[in-house]
Length: 169
Image 1 (cartoon, rainbow, N blue to C red):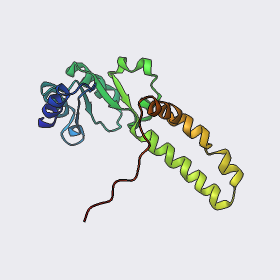
Image 2 (image 1 turned 45 degrees about the vertical axis):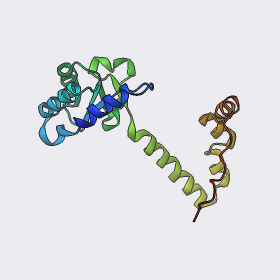
Image 3 (image 1 turned 90 degrees about the horizontal axis):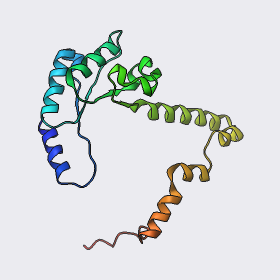
Image 4 (image 1 turned 30 degrees about the vertical axis):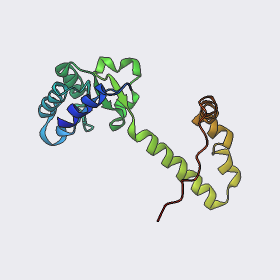
């Protein structure tokens, strides 16, 4: 709870928008009731939303709904833990108690899959396939917004990074 209080104080001292999300992993070892109790303590400490880390189970959707009803606070849910959650259209989330859905495994597994496939292509000498399944330098720059970053740097006079000054002995 001390971390939540510290984060809330830091938020008050900052102009940056910041949402404090409390998290508990207690459901797996202590049960849903204990996790909800801990989540309530996180809310009392200042958390604006909570994440009760749950495991995939036949009761998962019921557990999420129960937690949302008892907490009366936005519930963040790791949607990657169960295909039923991944298949829920966003417009149905609130009806199941999900205020904020996150997919933390999606990027890692997608990148890993693409990397493995392209490493296999490289190993087999399939350079055409490798190029066909890779981003061009321009596509990469477009996705990352490199042009917008460069325009911002020019607008605000940001110099390109220089080598750090030599260290004094």
